[in-house]
Length: 211
Image (tube, rainbow, N blue to C red; front, top):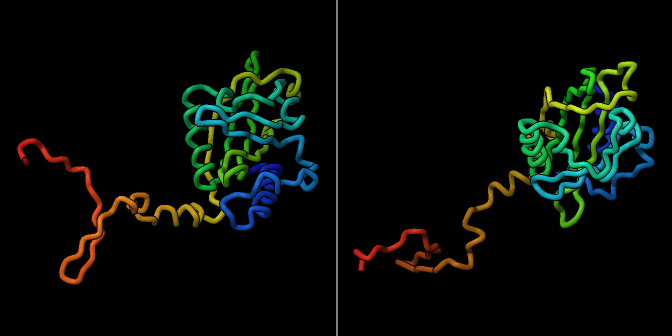
């Protein structure tokens, strides 16, 4: 995270997260980040192929020369970068990571500028991460920015940051659960010589030759 806006928004998000996988959407207080609102956005993840901007700050639209609200973020980039964004957003949603991306964008006349994007997970309904708080910070500030629309975008660097230094402890707990737990109701109890066993039917099928 190289830009002040990125660092400041991350610090705010991490404070309200308070050690959880992610803070709740309603815990984000616009008044607490008022000076950053023109550079921030809210994403809604509809499904694996659609992650659209529900809100986007005024400075974002002015810099790019396009209205971001309602736009699918995955449609900003080409096929290869789209796969990268899909994969990273999925990890952010499932494991509580923070995404930091560096983009290079061009105008129709070939003018180029770089910018940094931060994506932070938020819990909305049913304790699922399907909202994201984020920011856009221009790394380059050419004089033409805001006068020529940025129309082509590509990812030049990306990383996942773990607020606790590793995937959240809640994720570890889920991974430690027995793979048989969902099938407890299908088990048979077998007793032999004072011992009791819980037997799960496997996938081995008897052939006609076994009968």
